[in-house]
Every structure is written in structure tokens, then in C-alpha cells.
Image 1 (spheres, rainbow, N blue to C red):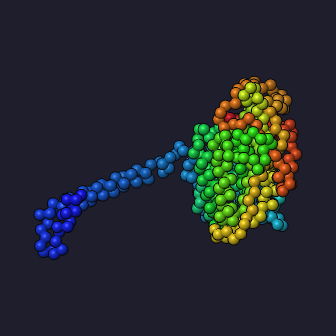
Image 2: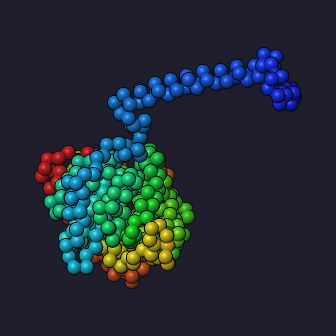
Length: 437
């Protein structure tokens, strides 16, 4: 380097006295420029071939098999007819009604909440990506159910910011009921990316659009009882520690609560998180124990019943869907307006978290006994140790805060709720001759 610098120092400032061929530095520099030109040329050729291959391939998605990305590939939206359906579905038809964007509307809770809002005259627009985490035909059946009641579900992904912005351009939503999420504790060990994609990136994507909306909507969203993790103090209270998640799913829901705090603090978004406790009922999720226990008991298959160390009981605070819906609607009705405008906070905004449970934990073995009586079939029980895959031994909700501030009063016991579920299950699968997994 020092020799090259000395050559630079020796170059005279008078051009007429300089002979290029006698300067090895300049000669080397010209050769370097020539090599650079060749390298650039071939780089463009190589890049062009890649682009040609990319656009001529059957799928333009570089990761077609990644479940966390597949939902962004194929959705079409927009146009006058589409906008007309969006406006019609979101139109408020009752005095003092609200206009709600329900994400995850083709999901279990989303379908029931959307139907309840529509029944009382609120404007409801659904959004769902119809992924195949479980049987998409069940989601399509829920969609058809909502369509008959006048609820349009836009097919798209919460990570599609352009779509979300368009929805807020077409409709000035007063509220958002954010239920879209990657659910399930055990599946996180198979596909962790889908949880980050939906539960963290998806939430941020939604909040980014909401913060810039004018007016900003009030947001109610689904957290989870899973945030209590390894907490051993029962019943679980909103003031208890939530810094020991037992699964990635729980960690993403806890992250969601922290993200909600951030957007409330910086942008003035009104945010209410609802910690659901083991929701069950008609139109439920096939990955839930009560659902696949029913399926396997009817098929004569053995069902796994987990027990904790030293034959400890595994119990859940099973909460019937109608009770959860009442809690969701109460949270929407008591949500205060966001205080920001154009992405800027104008004053303190409401920030809440509530437990929505039943307050009566039931051992899983008792759940099976109830199903046996309702189905009139004896279950083949396979007793196993509780695996270290994210499941916890018990959940038990303290709902005093929700009772006091939301008027939340669950009224359905497990026997009654499972009777309604079994009636639906037999009608949906046996009545329609559908295969249940």
C-alpha cells in the first residue's frame, strides 16, 4: 500500500509531462477497471437468468412449503364489487351500533363473535386466511354460516399491510376484534415460524395500520391463559407473574401483551387483551382434546389421558363458547376510544387485560367420563405421563376483575356445554356424512 501511495505522490500535476505507459500503478488500475467491467457484465447476465427462472417457474413463491408464508400467495381483492360487499357487511343497522373488523373470522371464536355482533345489528366484516392448520373445510362451513347471516369474510392475511390499509380506506371501523392467530401449544414444536409470523408479526402489522387510521379504532384481542406458564399460584389472576412461558405459543402471546402496551403508550391505541381459558363448544377446533376425544371414542381408538408426576391430576378450566362471546362483546362495549390521530398520541389511552374462564377446573379424566355418557360408548383410555411439550398441569381463572368491570358471568357447566357440542358434532359429521379426521 505504501508503494502505491508513493506512486500517487509522484504523479505530476501537469498532464503534458505524464506518460501513462510508464506508470505501473495506472496500468494496474486500468486492468482493474477492465476486470470490474467484465464482472459487472456477467453479474447482470447471471441476475437476468435468475429472474427469468423465477418468473417462469410454476410458483413465484420462493418458499412454497413454508406454512408461515403460504397465506400471502394467492389472494385477490379490490374492485367496485368487492368494495360494495365490504361496505354492506360492515354497515351498522342498529342505533348506537359499532362497526367491527373481526380477524380470524372463520375460526372457532371468530365465527361465534361475528354472528353475535351481526345478530344485534352491528356492522361486521371478517378477515381470514383459511390456512390448513386444521381441516379448511370446517372453516369454509363456518364461512357459509356467516354468509347466510350477512357477514362477508375477506380472504387475506393480517400481514398484508396493503389489504389492511384498503379495508380501513373503505370502512371507518370503530372497533377491531383481533382473533387471528396461530393456535395450539404442541404444534409450535413442529412449525415455530408460523407462531412468530401470525402472533407477533401479524399483530404488529395490524397495529401499524390501526395507529395510522383516522379515526383510530379501539382494539380487543385474544391473548391466552397460556401466558401464566409455570405459575403455581392458583387461581390465576391478572396481577400474577407471566414471565415463565411453558411453550412458544405462550411466549408469543406474552410478547403480544408487551407489544400492545408499547402501541398504547406511544400511539394512544385503546387495547384490551382477553386471556381465554380452554374454550370449547359447537364449531370448535379439531386439535382440542374434547374434539378429538369425541372423534376417537366414536371410532373405537384409544385416547391419551395425561397425568402429572406422582399420578397428579391434569385439569383445565373449560369455558363454553357462549360465555366467551359474552365476554368479548362486553369488552368491545366498554372499550374507550383511542386517543391518537394520524399516528400521533393526543392523550392517555385505555389498556386492559382480563381473564375469561369458567372458574371451575375439571380433571381431563372427568371430561372423558362425560363424553362416554353422552356418546354411549366406553373410551379406551391410554394413561400417559404429561410430556414436556408446552402443556401445563392445570389452569384455573380468577375472573373477579372481568366480573367487576365487564359484568362477565359464565353460566354453562361442562356437562351442559359438552351435551351441546356432541349434538352439533353428530349432526355435522354423521348427519352430513363428513369424515372427522
